[in-house]
Amino acid sequence: MKHSNAFTMEHATILISLVCNLRCKLCSAFSPYHTDAKHPSEEHSKESLKRFFQIVSHVDKFTICGGEPLLYPYLTEILEFLHAYMPQIGLLEILTNGTIIPSPKLLDCMGRYEKDCFRVLVDDYGHDKSRRVNEIKEVLQKTGISHSIRNYKDENAHCGGWVDFGDLTEKKHDTQAQIEEKYSKCAYPNRLGFSFAIGPDGYMFPCGPARRCWELGLVDNYSEYINLYDDALSVDDQRKKMQKVLQGNSLEACAYCNGMCEDSPRFLPAEQLD
Image (tube, rainbow, N blue to C red; front, top):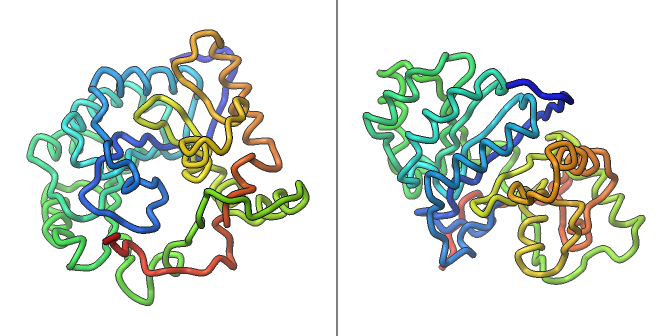
């Protein structure tokens, strides 16, 4: 697909559904707190992806996550749909929590991707949560699908464990200088180059806490999120909004967030809510 103005991103994701079969306390997508979450339609997910790839000419890594994406009933259809956009994607990835074995139909679809541009990333939270990790690993090996198991189950957990973004209902930083200092240390805008996530509603936010602060009604800075369905804006206007966020030195939501920093305390991943 040709673009009048090339715009590349390091990483972007689609929250294909916020429905999940785990209730992780420190979930970065805040899935357990969407108690009425429903799967978006196949048509809506495809339209959101089409609109995203009209704006973005290339993304180095594009991740399908959730929630738990393997619960999404149209995941195979979405994977088939994304074939057409592979010239714009460096690596297409599905992130799963190790609880569901991919169906034969889904495996067949995965197997049609070239190994160097597709993988399944399986988070292993231990046998009490990620109960099917070994079976998933076995079936992926058998079918020759590129995959990686990410350890979150012991003292050697990936990145030392999860971080606590904190209670986002109260401000933690009052001055702009404090907000910018937290932003300068946070891995989201720095080490990760942000991870703009397309939500089931078609809204894109640069990080999970920014979306959550918006959902709670704490922030509403129109310049800091993208509504893919805002037809009042041209593709170029949407692109400029995304570029402005990437070039900024803070987000309104940073005032409420602990950030994800090198010195952030780490916690046991996937601790379940009562």
